[in-house]
Image (cartoon, rainbow, N blue to C red):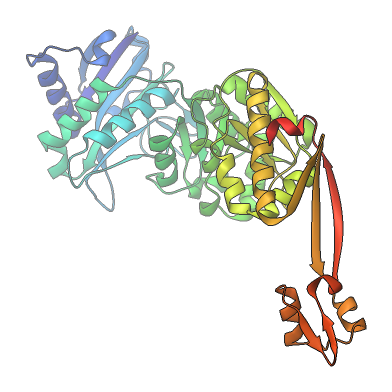
Length: 437
């Protein structure tokens, strides 16, 4: 890959980063930076970077990394990364409603490196899409140091950015577009730092009401996005519904922060297959990923009674134990778990065994059970107030004595707990049950 690293002679922050980058490349060392595996070109231009529309037409490059300063009305020491363009008006370069081509994987890689390299007192962050150049046809991104002259000229901060760029090595990310949040896109930044979710274009909350299907589609295309994230806490409910309609019309999947944080190493192809199976169960069900791994996704049905009784016995332990299994749990808006899981077909015997063992273990703690062939027999004995009344037991403390298994005397009659109990038997059919107990 051919990468051009571009700074402006008018930009003190970009100049500091560029100088530190050159120093790092020229220092004696016994290793190679990941970026050096590519063909690098360090370029200085005279005009400000925000006016560099069409600069790629004069460069033989596959990726442009602009080294720049960051300014803010509320200045804080910060290292940032973002792609350029204008979702609405063009107040600082570029054209209105025009976006540059993003490189989510490279921004993700550099952001994560900056998080580790940032000097004390500096924060790291994505920025929302907000300035030019917008007319750039090859993938590009800005890396910046800010937000005042002090930080622009800080060699330690400039070195941290330069080192992060040199150390960056993109991984298999989930390319996303983002909607909502402030200038520094806090939630999108947290997602990228803790998952494979990698953002391209991000729309500020104030721009949400200005979006239409055309712009959402353009953001998606220019980001190469396969899914979208909506910061629901930063957007009005009416706008959220409109955004969801736009995403649906663009065929874009909406992922939550929880979804992205639980993705692990799951490939996008496998995830889509899992979503397809879940939709066949119920189009409204939600997926809860528990490191399902790679393979052939398949449905695994479990007795609804077995699941219900296990959850009733110890809900917390049941769900905690699921998190240690390689499966996908399905839920509905008013039902925390469905009696069907998605697993990898290759793991079916192991997961089935673990699920049944878990359920039987939890139920055994609370109920009197027996195994008869492929049937789990659950015998429940409970106190019957009706029987107690018929035997003349007055309502009150004596009920408690009988419920606690103690014999009582009413007048001259001795009443044992067994005399006021009723029993019920429930049979749950579990093929091959004896193998799991």
